[in-house]
Amino acid sequence: MGTEMFRLDGKVAWITGGTKGLGLQMAHALAGVGANVAINSRNAAEAESAAQAIREKHGVRTYGGGADVTSADEVARLVASVSAALGPVDILVNNAGINIRKPTVDQTDEDWQRVLNTNLTGPFLCSRAVLPGMVQRRWGRVIHLSSMLGLVGLAGRPSYSATKGALVLLAKTQALEVAHAGVTVNAICPGPFGTEMNKPLLEDPKKYADFVSRIPLGRWGEMSEIDGVVVFLASPASSFVTGTTLVVDGGWTAQ
Ligand SMILES: NC(=O)c1ccc[n+]([C@@H]2O[C@H](COP(=O)([O-])OP(=O)(O)OC[C@H]3O[C@@H](n4cnc5c(N)ncnc54)[C@H](OP(=O)(O)O)[C@@H]3O)[C@@H](O)[C@H]2O)c1
Image (cartoon, rainbow, N blue to C red; front, side, top):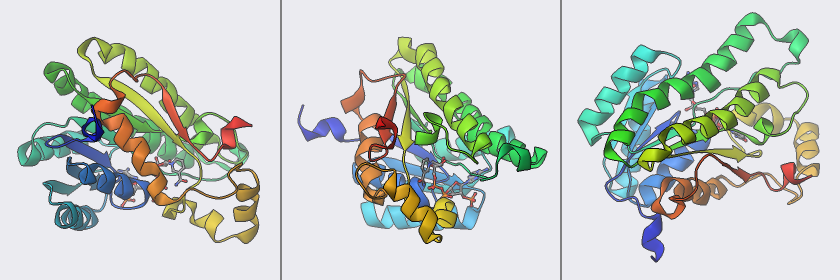
């Protein structure tokens, strides 16, 4: 196999939270290797316009719609709309996520629950909605966006780290459940990238520099440095890779 092992022509890839940040970046990357792309966020208008931009740039079919990943009903409706528009989902990238940076003693019940619902229940609901179809068709890829903070701790991120660590084990467990059908489930563990989620760090020179000083490669990730990672895990190139994590953190967790 040559570079065609990285092609996804005709496959349907659904990226949750694909309207901005890493989700939008990965949606473009998957469209760039031929996938038809569905994206959702809680903002339907943003999802539609991002889908349109991807369609115009890459010439693939796209769907954009509003759906909150914390709602099983909204997830079910979205999956039905994506299937009607593009066909059944072959690749799910569970990317939608939030972070509330407060130490345990300051996290309210609501903070804790919001992070768990979005970062952990969301990926559970979305993968539960599409795995049966993947198993039936005997091809599929589920990719959970964990984090370097799913592998190592950082003070002030109790809910975030707990959910990201849980996604690593969700990936392993689901991988075992669907391996018999050739469906793979993996997690990506990124280090810091310059997205809206990281605004509080990007806008604080001291915090930004502190992060840089802890990254062996000496810098934050460039947005395009997620592309090869998601394309690899989504494509035939990774057909024997399942139940594992691909860390893209400039070496943070190597220490
Ligand atoms: N950026 C990093 O450095 C980094 C590092 C490690 C891991 N990650 C992980 O990578 C993923 C993407 O991060 P990012 O930095 O790109 O985030 P971001 O720029 O804040 O984008 C998050 C996306 O998720 C959507 N979203 C949030 N809550 C949602 C919900 N309940 N239902 C549907 N969509 C929802 C947002 O849209 P709406 O708000 O309009 O719904 C947006 O499209 C996250 O899981 C994050 O934890 C990021």
